[in-house]
Amino acid sequence: MDAVTVSPKFQVVIPERVRREQRIHPGDKLAVIVKHGVLHLVPILPLEKTKGIHRRIGLKDLRDQHDRF
Image 1: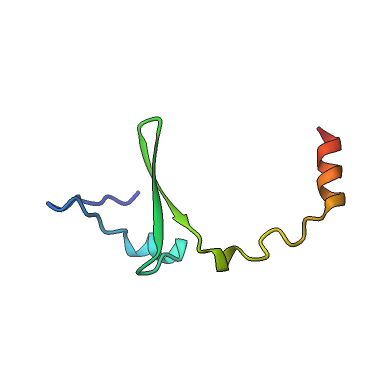
Image 2: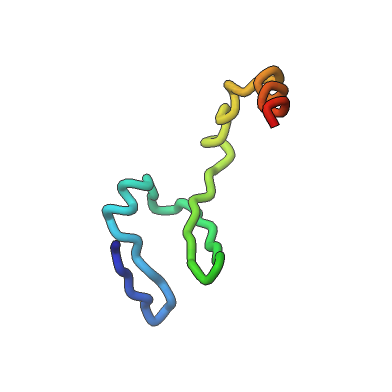
């Protein structure tokens, strides 16, 4: 577990190990979500990075998945 300190300007520094593992770079956007009292930072992917993310899923795959339920 890494601990961070909130600055007087309410800023925190994401530890280097976490930035490296999560591939977070300067200028990246993060969504701040509070769920059940826990603060989550979730990367917001730019549209160009999401291109083709579901390319392998076809209509037949969706039908098969739907039929399983």
